[in-house]
Amino acid sequence: SQQGEEDPQALSIQEGENATMNCSYKTSINNLQWYRQNSGRGLVHLILIRSNEREKHSGRLRVTLDTSKKSSSLLITASRAADTASYFCATDDKVIFGPGTSLSVIP
Amino acid sequence: NAGVMQNPRHLVRRRGQEARLRCSPMKGHSHVYWYRQLPEEGLKFMVYLQKENIIDESGMPKERFSAEFPKEGPSILRIQQVVRGDSAAYFCASSRDRATNEKLFFGSGTQLSVL
Image: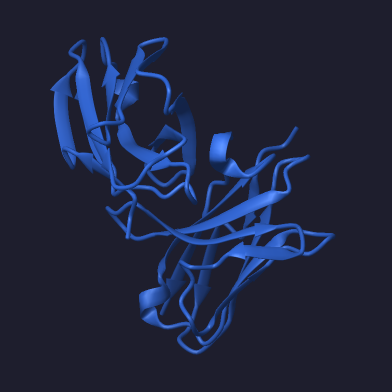
């Protein structure tokens, strides 16, 4: 079964707003990674957070990890139309991917 | 340094034919992962290989599917006697080391269409 599960399945926001996506997983992990996929393309790595970290930033991205709840969140601040894509979380064991969150940023 | 190269980009096969999908990992990467993606769905892990070895094939269908990563040349995902349900995008990813603490680099995928 898939290790990571993202929610919501789909999210539509206006440009400039913040977008928050969540990921839940089932077993213990060493790290959790977030990836982005533009339509019809391969995935691009965004950020990796280790199990001993609680929060990590990269540009407009902010990732949190709560190992007690087995969950992570990805926040994209000041969203742009170019952020429109699907976002996936993956855990280190076989790097299993969840079904993803489809983000639409409306100009 | 070229990224992960997959070919062909699109592959059309009739039912019963064989499909061979190729993946050349990034230079210096010896770990390869194959995934399948259906429309509007996430990636399903299929197989993880290291040079000349299959490390984990728990996501591979038991029949008709096989994968290899020879000492020389690309990794090959082979699907024999394809059926319509095999139609999907197949993605390959590579990493320098086992992906436990490494990010994956993905190819652009092969879109397989079975007529």
